[in-house]
Length: 182
Image (cartoon, rainbow, N blue to C red; front, side, top):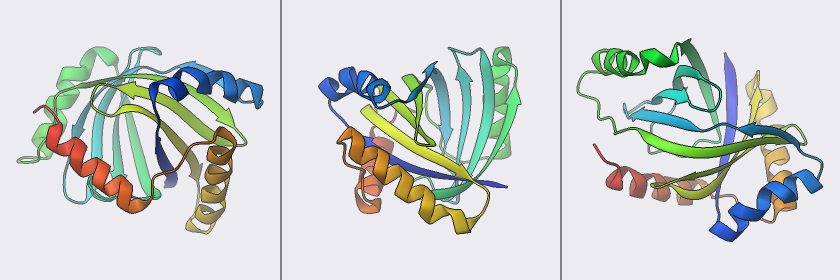
């Protein structure tokens, strides 16, 4: 099973507008738009989402280890692809596998992806999360997590953005969950 090492930076609209050019100037590979519509489920021990990628006409169910209100720099992850036209059925299926688990109305997110220094950099905006950057590196073992975190910190420093601490991310996620439409 692969491990996704992930960190989050909150940014303002000005940085959001400029960061793509900055990434290209730094030599990043531009992977293009990656806009999504996602329904999140919040079991106590995992993060689960059903997602349609409207830019790439793909869809997947994703399970990540760790609770939905806990910041984790590294999580085990499993993905299951399905046909985009089956989005509603996939949401229904997951809700039946997780009876009684809260889930939230679809979140539409504008996203543009890059790769810089082996770090996936997703520049994002959604009405609920606002402007933010997600940094991630996928590794094969726990022994690689620390090096992945160092790579992420290095890229964030080049972009002059502040990575949220675990406490800040936990607080941000609690706030987002309290505002999420059900």
